Image 1 (tube, helix red, strand yellow):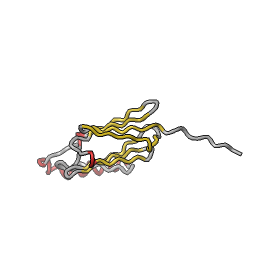
Image 2 (cartoon, rainbow, N blue to C red):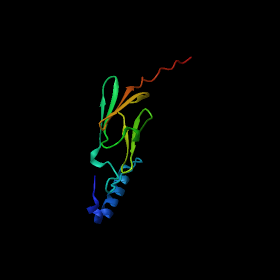
Image 3 (tube, rainbow, N blue to C red):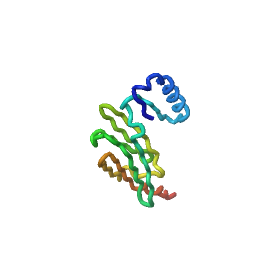
Image 4 (spheres, helix red, strand yellow):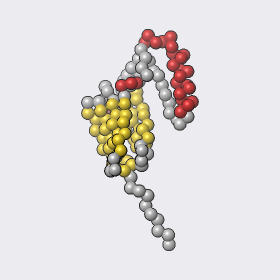
Length: 129
């Protein structure tokens, strides 16, 4: 949600919505409705595409320079962070299956981020002696 400077009388209202949403999520998520250009708001969108061989995450990050983007993955969650002088964006994307985070490739062109992972190999069998 994006607000402009004319919405200042509603600051208490938005703070209460933030508090209620954070309470509802209860998973460590932190929702913020910042005024002005403090957040990317509705400008961003992330899709996850799954095939038999790979997981592809595509995100729109308009107005962000490639050097301002930081990506981290633990095999189950991709964290996308972008921090510029006027904007801040942090999103955790739960991946539909475990991925091999070391196989990741990422590209960023014209405001579109694309990260591709190979699926992680299935669990290894253990021989019992």
